[in-house]
Image 1 (cartoon, helix red, strand yellow):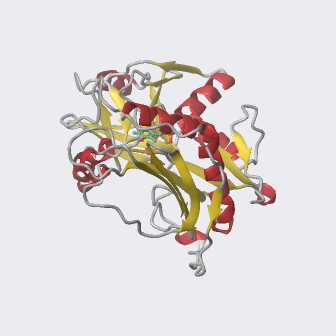
Image 2 (cartoon, protein in one colour):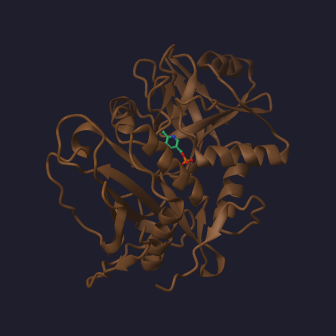
Length: 360
Ligand SMILES: *Cc1c(COP(=O)(O)O)cnc(C)c1O
């Protein structure tokens, strides 16, 4: 495969919003990366072009049957203007795992990484530097074949867009209020709960909108069979600390194998904090709360990194955690992870990689 990336720079650079005005995912940089797939040529025609609308036929398969795969990672502006990525090869691996589940062709890991690095380099002036800010990187693969009978598409488009972001939650890392969703579910065994694919998220909107209407920040999703066990919080992996043991649901195919989740487990084990990957029921959480042994809870994902949980409401019972404040273990994880991501503290795990300005 020809690995040349053609770069067509825009003539009209957009103004960059000030760092303190950044929300999450509402501003896009000047360029995007695009690459085509068809059966004759495989992945081909790599380009960086001005960010803007794309033209697709209404019958393109992605609009109808959800054959899509996406990723989310971030570039950080570290000390000395270094541009750092956090574990990007894990995103390269996971987009192909999602693609495999949905009968989409894999993208060579090197191609994925080079595309990300080249695009970030072209738009490097967009990487914000205020605390809590970063450049969110959103790769997506969509099925483009113009064909209405259900089958795997024969053509695809891979696009990467960049969005300078502030804190995921408007209130920064303030503890969140969580509603335990006991009717709708996000995933079932054998389904696509471990895949980052479009339909997985649309199905959560109704419960999330309802919960938001009642003043909650996120929904705690339960397992799809018994609606007893915690699975994820919003679009993050979830952790509970009970009696000095940190517990997170296991990777049995119904939850996302989060890169942040894996990093949290690695840190805890490194620190000698007991960490278990096992099923945890809401009843167990409620019993621990009653007994006074539910110490902390938090969500973990690239977008918010770590978001402390201050309160969980299950049916008519509301449980406050750590007096509604961020707990010490949650804070330590947040500070260590963001410190490593920004290159401020040593990275003994080899998680960060520097984007070295590529000479095209
Ligand atoms: C992306 C995602 C996560 C977090 O994964 P990271 O790799 O840590 O960003 C968790 N749950 C869901 C449903 C996700 O889509």
